[in-house]
Image (cartoon, rainbow, N blue to C red; front, side, top):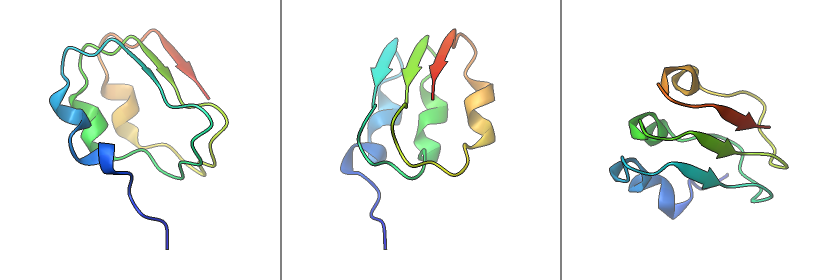
Length: 68
């Protein structure tokens, strides 16, 4: 059973965060708390083991670069 990373519970509180680099962390899912990152412009999730991404990624209003 895959555990949710500890940061996933509080990351949504960082609403002014602009860049987030989570590449090569063996992540299997994007927690729903990420939808609160409304200032996020760059999101690097490359080199993880996702099988799908949540629809909430599309709701990030100023996201310019999504690296998978």
